[in-house]
Image 1: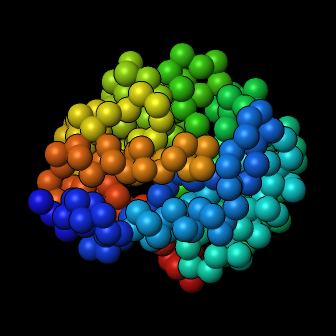
Image 2: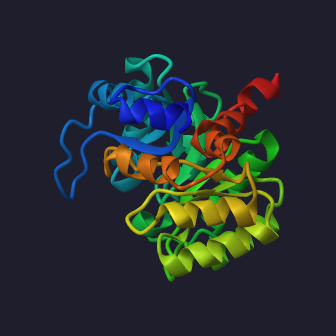
Image 3: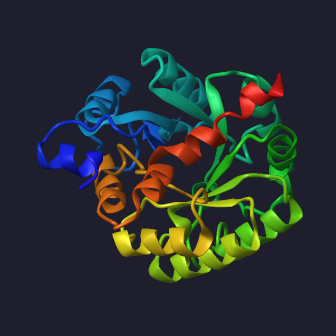
Length: 268
């Protein structure tokens, strides 16, 4: 057993690996109840599980109101110093250029979040042009929702965007979301070096994660949970018990995402 599994069996928070959750949210969601979605409650769960940091966007931002939601994301970062980094959510129908101008230089934000399915707009659409320009110019990673077969964020659209913007770092949220989606996400990532696979969702398994690392490579797969939309322990357990070698496991759990968040320090 490595340090993480030893801590788990002893029912203690692990401290041997810096775990960074690459896909989290905060705040209430309009369609169903989420218990304790506050930054303070989230930190308590993170502490129990030995998760050092999470990159998050507010549910308000990804669903109903990007402007108010991005402000809520910034507030969440402020309420738990050192524990969160924000995703700047860009809704293509709600002043995308204005939101980029307002928050793009704010150090509380370390990435951009797109949710084409919720926003009814294709990932390849022209309203996202400013996002890809910003990402290529700065190195800011872009986390996009993906779902195999979606008219808005299918893996073919990820492939097309990555081909057109080869210097952009694109985190494929849910890695396609379904077993067929995982297959197609791996194929896209093999073709496009800027595509990173993120593993949260209801259908992913430990063997799926191990296969992603084996076929795409260490440094191209990151742990995410969708917490508190989904309990962070679900994805965390899948990674921990996936059979990955210790170095590969550490990369998935935090090393890779820590590196991707360092783009701001490189701007100076």
